[in-house]
Image 1 (cartoon, rainbow, N blue to C red):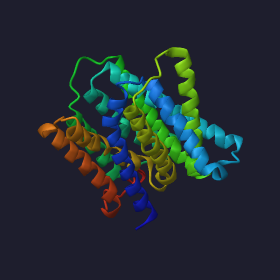
Image 2 (cartoon, rainbow, N blue to C red):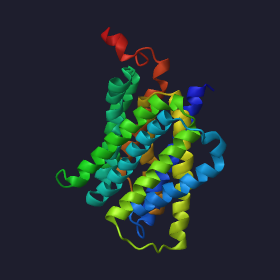
Image 3 (cartoon, rainbow, N blue to C red):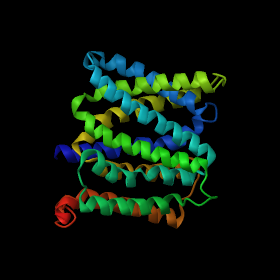
Image 4 (cartoon, rainbow, N blue to C red):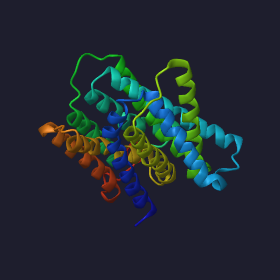
Amino acid sequence: MTAKTRAEWVLVGATLIWGSTFVIGKFVLREMTPLQMIFLRFGVATVIILALGYKTIFPLRPDQILKGVVLGIFLYFGFVAQTVGLMLTTASKSAFLTGMMVVFVPFLQIIVERRLPKVGNIVGVVAVACGLWFLTSPAGAAFNAGDALCLLCALLFAVYIVYLDVVSDDMTAMQLTFVQAAVNTILAAGSLLLFESAPWHFSGSVLGAVLFLTIFATVLTTFLQAKYQKFTTPTRATIIFALEPIWAAGAAALFLGETLGWMGVFGGGLILAGVLVSQLSEDIPFLGKSLDSLFS
């Protein structure tokens, strides 16, 4: 198994963890505000990362800190836009609009890295975007503020994925994970002081759920993405990340009794097809060509 293939399978595993957070997050938000959840997740994560990897994190050069801070800012405001947007629009529209980062990434990759994706990647992007539409069935009222925030979230996460590809070779995965977690903790703490005065009384089960989100959906997945995404392209990584709503839909069906219907099943199939086309494109002559070669 090549390093690239191994890395992409690891990223698939990360999407499985992210998908499970849909159900867990809804449970936690019954007692916590979004900012409280972000602060606790990343605050505890920062302590855990520091305890586990102090010797491998420091020293940090000023330019490395700056790169990690920029990544952390994109991650934080992406989380905030997604969470607040979800409160103002329907879950289906939020899921679809957030998933549209799969459309933004190829264009950002061209702008930031001056690199065109392959034909198979573009075919995969189109299939995934259509699949997201059918899977989430984003029906609802006219475009509103919540929809705009979810679309902003998609753009912020897309920029995050492309910029991570740019800086990941200059920092270790532990350094990247620590700086991002610390930045999110500081920003969430500042936001709480400025905008909220909610009580801090939570049940043990909710705190346990937050601990799961911290260890698996924050520390582990952020580390894995920082370590392994650099072995593939941002476009291929984003197509893999599109598996998240499939796992989320499965978890919702299993634990919340939600049903997909035929449109959801068809959408999930399109997403899987898009992932497979992108993954196998290098072995198929036409699909494996870069867009550079088509226009040269």
